[in-house]
Length: 404
Ligand SMILES: Cc1cc2nc3c(=O)[nH]c(=O)nc-3n(C[C@H](O)[C@H](O)[C@H](O)COP(=O)(O)OP(=O)(O)OC[C@H]3O[C@@H](n4cnc5c(N)ncnc54)[C@H](O)[C@@H]3O)c2cc1C
Image (cartoon, rainbow, N blue to C red; front, side, top):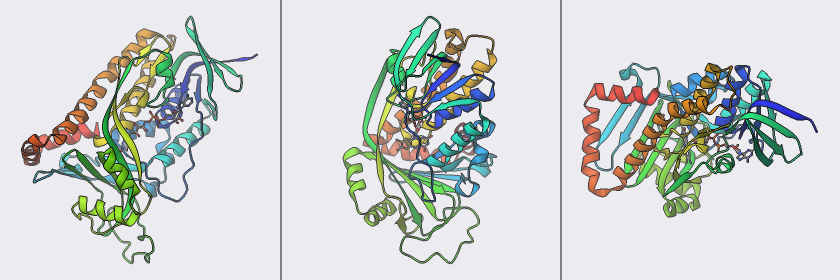
């Protein structure tokens, strides 16, 4: 039987695995990408899975050629972020005041996924195997043999696990991980709003609940109503995406609500900031958990994306951390292009480079979650927010940290 030989085989062609494959393929490495199921192709309907892409991730995606394939009418820059406490605290982060063009870009998961796959096809540097499942994995000296369920055999110097939170590659490599459920779920849904958002994202902390409204590009008439007469909003339109992190039992209640009743609840929880909300997409809920992985590398193995870490979505940074992994791994392999790709010395450098940003984000989101979940700390967090709001240099530093 013929054997296909690659320097890098990536398992999982979600957003992170696809971006890593593109970046590595563009560096001239022989790369295969294995995915068990094709992603749904986007249509005109709105995806309720929305991401806030940081400017650093945007620059990386531009370099891979995927960003340029996105429909400009479906991406929305965030210019301001209003953060509210449960009693009185308030904090506004403003791109203009901090001297940056935007804080993040909001886009749909399915459209970014499609752009990445189109770029892979257009580049022609990556052997995409989909749908394909792994029947067996075997380490033999400095290579790994991967047998697919159709019987084909691949050999790799390096296997990259980009196969998500329940990573099979992580398990096969024996990399220990701890999963801490938050007992919460993230409820997501999109709405039309009565007042244009003008590129502002909102976030409210209330007890252990965190409600975020992210501005979407474009304009739509609320379901069942005539198209709005005024389409002349200068910055952004009247569509928003919500992520409501809440106790799982409450999340189940929210998802079970009639869409109009959910819209009313979300409108009230957001203090009517954008007028009347009307449902645009059905609600869905995802369990929230912290995943810590003892080591993200081993000889011939590297983990990236959710396979390597899981964070609370309150900072909207999960996929951005994953793109940071993909970029760092591709850069590290490029810097050592004459070395075997599975060399554990090189892989450890990748792991060291990523340890600090991942640890910082896990500590920040975990710490904020507990600060807001503890009622005794209410005065402290509200006072803290108001204090930061009155300290422009600190605010500018916060914005620079968010966009880097
Ligand atoms: C409610 C919620 C809101 C979020 N909001 C944000 C946000 O605003 N911003 C943000 O940055 N992040 C956000 N995140 C986090 C984000 O969704 C994840 O970090 C991101 O999707 C991880 O991408 P990934 O490619 O690593 O993994 P995945 O998206 O899980 O992709 C893994 C891929 O591997 C494939 N696969 C798995 N096993 C195998 C196998 N054995 N063989 C072949 N293929 C396999 C799967 O089919 C899949 O395509 C949010 C998460 C939640 C729960």
